[in-house]
Amino acid sequence: MSGFTPFPETRWTAIRALKSDDSAARQLGWDVVARLYWRPVESYVRLKWRATEPDASDATQSFFAYVLERDTLAKFDPDKARFRTFLRTCLERFLINEHNAQTAQKRGGGMVTSLETAGADGAALDPADPEQLDELFEREWRHSLFAAAIAEIESLCTTDTARLQFALFRRYDVERGAAEKLTYDDLAREFNLSVTAVTNHLHAIRVKVRLALLEKLRSITASEAEFLEESYALFGARGGAR
Image 1 (cartoon, rainbow, N blue to C red):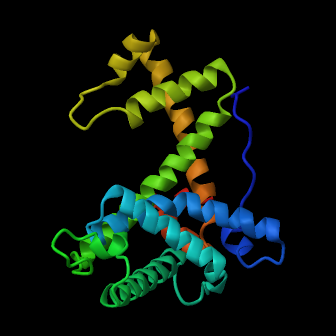
Image 2 (image 1 turned 180 degrees about the vertical axis):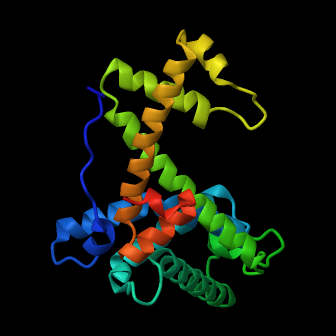
């Protein structure tokens, strides 16, 4: 036995659930989206507004509360754009509306809130390089996706063998710094294993992580075409999508 519990097929569940008549299903979809996109949204706000971490966190919470209250995400049309593009558009509109509202409040002598004062030079909406913002959002989204998949795999490791495989994976693929010259021989000595055992264990756990990533990806894409496009971007080969 591998010590891994099979994970369920999710096949677009999160995105489709956002439009469901079932409130429990909508909440499930919302939870998945919020977990995977919280960090990308927060990082985007920090860069665009040059905000402090607490201010960016507050703005992110306000954004997700805003789209939840108005059921905005249920308006997503997969024929017009990727979900991530749609969410970015919603975020941009929210930030502009917040800026306009806070500017009006400032002119009226009211209290100025965090986003209005986020920029140290007072130019909160002086945009950063659009390409830099795009790259940041994409990078943080990938990080959230990988982190969610890895956390799920760790929770499914229920035997000594599975936990050993995950420990090897974490040491070599997660914790190893770019400058650290860690080899399979080093791992074998560190874990008191043969190099062959290290190789086999790492191969097994990487397959599990890859499959978990694909299932996470399926849950937040709205069509087979979008899933294939996203999996190609992640793995560089359409053959990775099963």
